[in-house]
Length: 347
Ligand SMILES: *Cc1c(COP(=O)(O)O)cnc(C)c1O
Image (cartoon, rainbow, N blue to C red; front, side):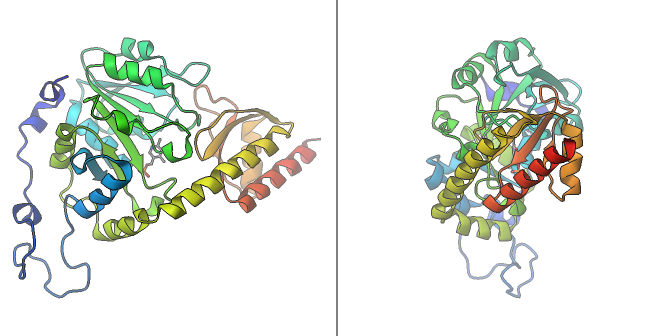
């Protein structure tokens, strides 16, 4: 795959904005180049547009070179930029597995890109052949998500690899939930597949949803394109500083992941003893998809008990299903209590 052949022409020829911090990099004693306020209050200077300090820490953690890392205002920024880099509005299309994360589709619609859905099989898994079959010469991106939201399972590694090998375009694998999975990340395959983009985020296992920090890992050619088209200062300094601090503390990350995994286990066992729970799908994430007797009625009952889960019952293959995030032991026991009350009310 030649990147220049799949990039949009206007992006290929784009002369990017050059900000003050692009033109002069390094240390100086007097900065009079960016029309900033000279009065120091800790946030009066523009932040590093390429977030090097933060990327060095991520590079250590993930064992991926800095040049292969892009940071965005949430994963959602990387998703949107990938459309804008590769997909010509009204001409190109993407292929995505269904059901999966809603932003791939919304972002396609915003960018006026045809979104081609391929249903998962009965095991909620992909079939590489079906994905390729749904593509044509205008297909620029295939969206995969593993572990998948909302089904919770990881995808077959062999089918992901086949997709990477067969498809002459970008294959995005969204690993937002990888820290909860026993499966290895695809990051170790980055150098092998130049068309692979791996998405991860600080929003889930790292517990930092509010600071908005998403990571995209890919070949340095792809990362260069994303850097060229992003807003110059897309990650604010408060997020950069806070993220750096958080990323030093892997002990807390590991502790919280262990607690969530133990709670997930307890929650699933308890759910399996409840009559109206018809099926608990295998999960590699910090949530569990369950099929229940009457999803809408149960959802409303939970809302009226001030407990909010995600009603996924109107989504393809998830008929009758609720998606439940694993909370603290207390959250989960409040949920279970409400479920057993609901069973009694029904009788
Ligand atoms: C939660 C989630 C994300 C995270 O998005 P951010 O913008 O980084 O908060 C990405 N992908 C999937 C599949 C998710 O479920």
